[in-house]
Image: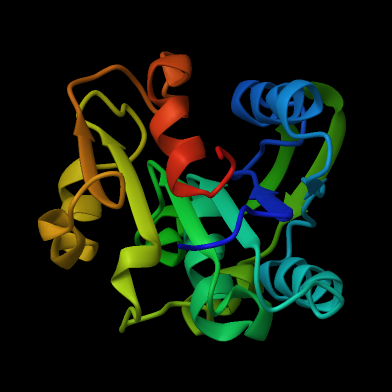
Length: 208
C-alpha cells in the first residue's frame, strides 16, 4: 500500500493564481485535515520555461516518495510535464482538472498584455516565444498511467473535453479512483469541485 502523501504541488492555469477557487479549497482542506502535508501553490511566471524551472528547482528538494501533483487547465499540462520529466514527479500521484492538451496552439491567439483573473492590477505580457516554450514541454508518451486521474467536464466552455479524452484515452480503462472521469457539465472551473474532491483526495494519497 502506498504511504500517505507528505508533499503536494498545485499548479494553476493561464491568468489564474493561488487565489483560484480550487486552490483555496484544497489549501483550506489540508489546513483542517492534513496540516502535516507540505503544500505549495506557486504564482507561476508567464514564461513556461521559467515556470517549470522554478518548479523543478523546488521539487529537487522534495522526497522521491509521498509526492502528489494537482493541475488545472494549463496547470494540468504543466503537471503532466512534471510527472514525466522531473525526478520528484516520477512517482507522484496526479489529479488533472480540465487539462490543456495543446496550449501552444490555444494560447498563440493570446499574445499580448493580460490581467490576472483574481487581481486586475496584476498585469503580464504573454510573448510569442512562450508559444515555442510550450511546444518543447509537450509530452507525447505517458508512463505509469495508474498515477493519473483526469477530470474532464463536458460543459467546459474554454477547452474541448474530447481532446482531453483522446490525450488520456488509455487512462479510461483504469479502475477508479485513477483514470479518466468524464463529468457531465458543469464548466471549465469545475464549479462543483466539492462533489469530486473526495475521490481526488483518495487518489492523491491524502486520506488514510
